[in-house]
Length: 392
Image (cartoon, rainbow, N blue to C red; front, top):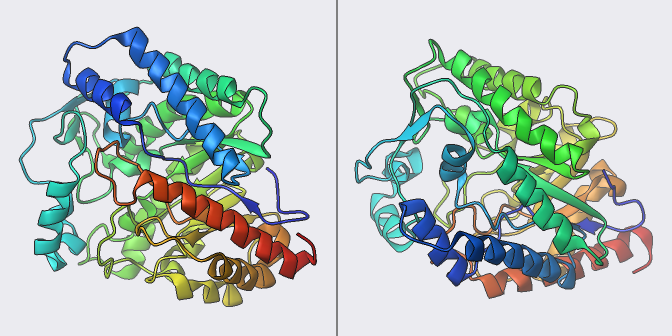
């Protein structure tokens, strides 16, 4: 994995807005309506090529495909794994029953109405043995990205994939009716998803484990003691590490976050509560939120926590949940203060999270603003480089 050896490198977290006409075809395909499969495949290829080119034009060094082919994590699992079926929607999004949703019900009722996902909704249920059937789909993703990169220069390429833990978190996790225990369910998921991990790394890309569940799993049951909740998270991490076995940590980056909404976020757990758990994951680099106003102060954590040798931090230095474009000087300040604690070569700039984790017509941050944020991040990284190395 590339390091910031002579300048601060830039990357992002993976998801970018899908074009409107692609969303139309994706919605029809997910709903079982008539659509032109060849036209759909061609539109995905073109969307990947466009977003890779724009990433490079706006200063992203470590690029990906923008997850243009993926409607969202839940649909992604149904398409690539056996053993699941979708129940009819209860008509109440899980977000409303989260701790944050209960704290601000009026706000989140409006939020979910504004930003419905495309395609069918409703909870997933595991009803049979889990096996991976996404070999053709992941190879298509890999090929589309390789074609998009042809003739272009970038520092490195990554591709996101989900961990099993995403599907066992509270408030929206997948219900298991087939496996005897949640632990068996977790490991079966991990073994199936491992096939995707291997396909990505075998293709020569960096694997990003895209995981908002670490910060949620820590709160399995508020009635449990802190130590009991920690043990639950450690079980999940053990399962993730098992699914990553044999893949060199230098080929893996790990991302965790608190979700993609622009809400009040008062229930976010602090970095201090999960940093030790995060560092147990067998990855070389760790991507996490540190730009939004609930977490901008948490760079102080690294005054007390020693970054293990050989590891890399990918802190959020640009907010993913507001249309305000972070100022390059503020971005540089965020980078420099962290680099002086953990080493300049161990810091890569990124946004807090992705900008379109769920394919939707109405996103929190307008797509045109995303490119402006990337440009500001490039300029901020250049300013930080001047301060840390003394050159542009």
